[in-house]
Amino acid sequence: MLEPTSKGVIRDLQAQGVAIYDNSMLSACITCPRLLYYRHQRGLVPKNQQPSTPLQFGLAVHASLETYYGGSTEHEALKVFVEIFKPFEEMATISPKTGKELGATYTVLYGCSILSEYFRKYKSDAREIVMLETPVAEEISDGVFLAGRIDKVVKGRSGVVFVDYKTSKYIDGFQLNPNPQFMTYKFLTEKLTGEKVSGELDLIGVSKTKDVSLLLRREPFNYTKYQMDEWRKSVIGNVKTLEFYKANNFFPQTWRCKPFYRDCAFLPLCTLPEDGMVERFIEEMYEISYWDPFAEEGD
Image (tube, helix red, strand yellow):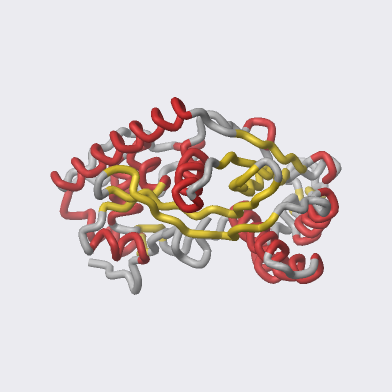
């Protein structure tokens, strides 16, 4: 059996009998309980998995903005982005059909350009920074805790606002309502501050064809008491379902094996003809790495 070097804060608390979950676990449970088991109960990830360039781009942008809002200069913030993202940037490729060069999208130059425009566009934002990249866990029902990591909390004339950064090629299709992640952040921020809060989405677009000034959008949003009550009841219901699977040590399949038109990372395990082959395949094909919002690189 594979053994992790560190299970992380959430797993350590769970081992102590604390019922603590995050949106990644609940989302996996809804998508496919077997996915929840392999990814979050066992902590499995494919060996030698190539880093996702868009994910690394987003992590570098987050780190740059945290540096900037933490009091550093624009130059220092851009330097952080370059240091983190440079090993993962895309290179130009040659089209097999035309033989022409196809320019890369996720590049250091592009990241610096969009961040520089972000700093310029929102330079006049005078709101007080309350928290940056803050991991939080709060009790959502008796003995059950919900955890998350909030990018930024600010306070101004309109009150307390939690801010979430999103980098995406699809900025026109982002759904704000309902959005369980943002509802979680509203719940956590209100518990943490003791005040009513609203949300703000900072969309940072990625495109080779559009001017960077057109790819930045800041959208305020909020949820009513009824919406939050329905969200809370749904979370509690999903937690009960998750705990039922754990208590029975059985995590059923839903056969959603191609999310976003790509094979699930655990599809090879779900296609094995015999139970005795599972652990051997896990040893050969996977390693252990638990995602944790309390870790340094939580998202």
